[in-house]
Length: 228
Image (cartoon, rainbow, N blue to C red; front, side, top):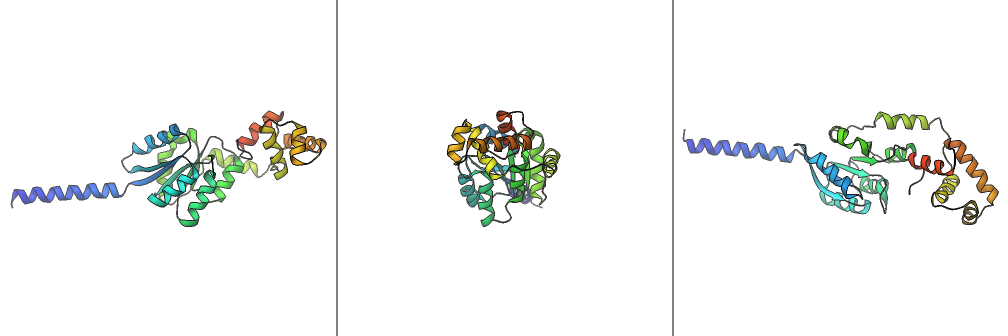
């Protein structure tokens, strides 16, 4: 057999193998308003032969636009971002692309926030501290059609079922407390008496097992009732 033909056949085979390896990569869209977080995600993903970051977004609106353009296999998205935020961005994407797979990232393991994300269709929910060790494995799980909730977050969700949730009016009070408002200012803003504000604050402290107003705001943020 002609050696030139053999070499040509071998080269063609190598090109075909290379093409399949590239085409079978898991494509990823990284979404976070902090550039360092996006770079961290990209670094983890690009270190794997079977994955690649095809685009990066810094807001929910940009994430929706880039998803339409690239239709990646997996989206890794921050929950809390300026604009429409991660959950609303995912809901918008899901309306157009029902099979979209989204992994949410957050600093807090907040039960209210996690519950909203999972109910909205999130495939996974990870703490940002888990990214270096867990992200690669979770991307592969989600890409294969599985859902994954870390035990830490699952435990908080289970615990939340036995705890009293804050009402919408209590959350309104906490948002104003977080903004630095006094009871007087809160009463004017919400058009209620100061005694009503004090009563609601008392209930908030009891429900969250908080020592004071500042502690209540911190716990409410961790559990996802409010965002700053």
